[in-house]
Image 1 (cartoon, rainbow, N blue to C red):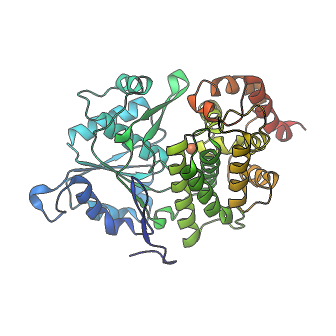
Image 2 (image 1 turned 120 degrees about the vertical axis):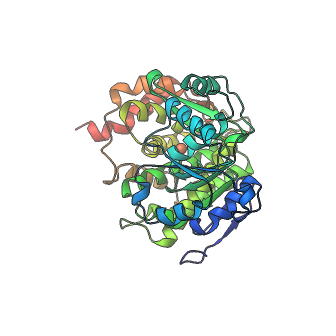
Image 3 (image 1 turned 90 degrees about the vertical axis):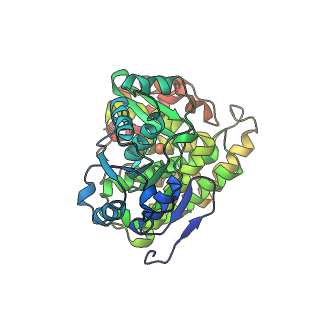
Length: 405
Ligand SMILES: [Fe+2]
């Protein structure tokens, strides 16, 4: 059991229990039995009922058959979640979880699949989950606790959704990003199987790497950051360093492992510290300009990095500006860069990777993106004060050089 580079093991960290470097199909039955509190799949009287949530293209991936065969030893129902989580898709899946009387939810996919599975599991205890129930639960900030346990198997490296106690839900009609949060949303187990990244399109990988970099830096500089989140963020950046300088398309085994681990640790960092203004600005960029989540976060990251590194009297962190500047300096070093500018330049180049769609001209929409960003509570986690004017200037500057000529 394990990968070619021999990096196998259980990460000794808080919940979720994280198992890295294993083949998912070889461990998943044992993990389901453990999550359900039964004696294992051979115990016929106590066979847990399983819902597996998968994304588009699941059956085309080389690892899907062994995974299905392994989970087929349980009463299994497979549900597809295409696209971003919405109140409708979460309510629909919550109904399926109820109808199947699922004891365990296994989410196999990227951030959208995992977030839908987490939210649906948490809301499946409600008698009649509807899209309105989902929206209300997000708006009321209702804390969900008891729910069928979730086992998360990320197939993209970077969202960290397998580690966080929250789910992002997109309310397109209202043009808003909603959050459902609570201990019931945190998976009990995360399985980091590098083989699940085989066949990942380059655009997904680059987008995920940008999300990892954003979450690593935000987890380090947030006003809610502590020693643990800073360490997790810096370690995620250190694991990402080699990937940042990657010259070829495609990932070797060691790189797949590094990417998964980096994404996971960055996810753990934001589970502690919360995200900041890059994520706050990303939601409008996704909803109105169609950027993927990672691309949307990465687009503003270099500018926010430079801005936050210049923090002084306008510091929003009660611990003071030196703490923020030191945390940023440590994160920059961890990423293998010798200056803020060097790291910012690499991030800017990555956000303009030929693998990604061209960056849209956001200058005309900058004031609206800025105003909306400040309505998300995570904007308040930024360590340097932000205003609509400052954010507007920052956003306008980002695409100035792309569209000025
Ligand atoms: Fe993110």
